[in-house]
Amino acid sequence: MRLGITDKQIAEEVKRAILEADIGGNLLAVEELESFIITTINQSVLLPSVRIELMDRPKKRLDLLGMEPRQTREPSEATAVTDKGTLTHDYNELSCKETVIDLPISYRSIRRNIEGKSVLDTIDGLAQMRFGNDLEDMALNCDTATDPGDPDYKFLKQNDGWNKLAKDGARSTHKVNTNGVTSRKAIFQSMLDALPQKWDGQENLAIICSRTDQRAYRRELSVQVGGLPYIIDKEANKCEDIPIIKTPKMPAGTYMYTPTTNLAFGIEVAIEKEMDKDIQARVVIIVYAASVDQEFVLDDAVVIAYDQGA
Image (cartoon, rainbow, N blue to C red; front, side, top):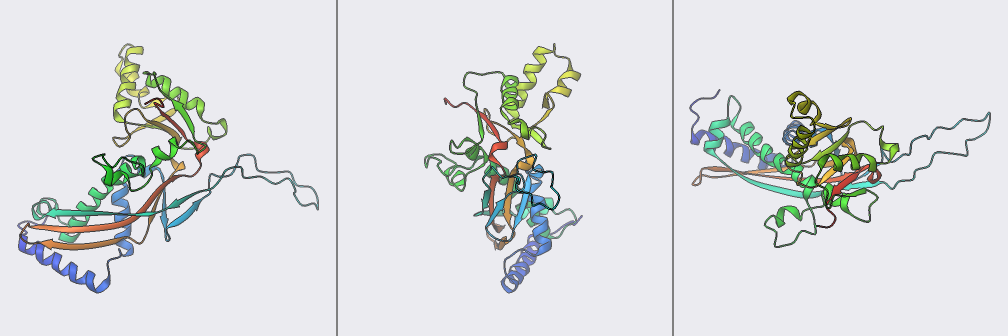
């Protein structure tokens, strides 16, 4: 642990880093990029289990789940196969948009969190954790049609998240109406039934919901089984054989059922970082600019449940 580090030492190390960036440029080096991605992604509940696409250009077509099952055919001797497998689903595409986070980090926070690391590593770690806290929220909830009067308008209008995409009537996702339904168990079972049977064998199928809804589901089960703790603990984290992922970033009353690997999150690898300091305010100012996007690999493998009368 680094003991007794002073504000002056912090300022001097930041000053050297600013000078080096002016000479070498602001793009993250390979080792910095790896640290950035690992730290930011691991801040969330859901993103570590989704399909992460590292992109060297702003757009990328997603096609791994776009093939129907039962594509193999029996060949004939010395004859070309004419009855070939067909693709019946459109390809979706990641199209990254830049997002910027501007973070003032106080000298006090740096001193409290340094714990044997360099000043710069401490600053990067704090900034990346704060950035990572927003990524899952963005991926789930952003909506370019957000009302300008919404207090979170500037955050939400950046892009369209998975919830907005799944509810889009023009897309071939499967919508379950929860209007008037209070039983989470009934909602979850309706979602399982709504997924086409051809996707039922996919790995990593999961129900995604808020912690509020998962707690309500737990209470519902406790009433049904007489409140026996061992039964509740075992059953409340899944519906039938499907695990439940509870994340605080999922809005209460909205539920998604899909393979987690059908959720694609793209990050363009050209990530910029700039740093400055304000000696009077005693803060380091760090700015990250990263281009990200989220999509479904395949719309047909998504079930979204919500109150369609709200």
